[in-house]
Image 1 (cartoon, rainbow, N blue to C red):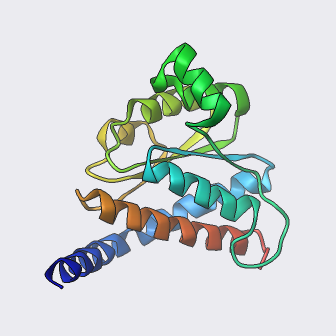
Image 2: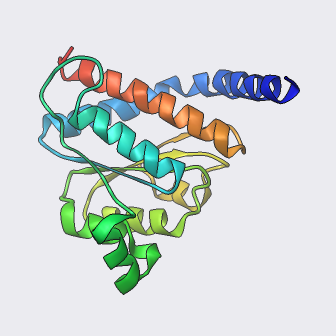
Length: 188
């Protein structure tokens, strides 16, 4: 019971500390809505649990979040499958997302980079390529933001050093963004 209560208390504290990011969340949602209104795509990337979150949130947009509506341009980048093994084998794992961005993304698209540390080389490289392609970069970050923080146009930096708590806030914020996107596009 002690371990269970410890996790609940940590989560509650980080949740309270994260509430101060409401203005940043609203600002990010406006950027995403405007991109979608202009027929631009949202690309998502992350490693491990953050990659799972990328696929989850992309699915909420291309599928649906709350109600039945048209699909939105949302693409989660892969680290696995044929694309991932080919890129990793031929160019190295540090190019896993940047190579996909280079091949798929266009000027005006958005990259949502999800990283708890902000120091993943493959995420950093994806952001650098996205910048060269004149994309807007949104960072869902933690642990101070790492090397990715300085490259993001907008970031939501979770005030925690604990990976699990950061990921919990990232998925909650992702769900809030999906709700705000549907609202902003009058799709509810």
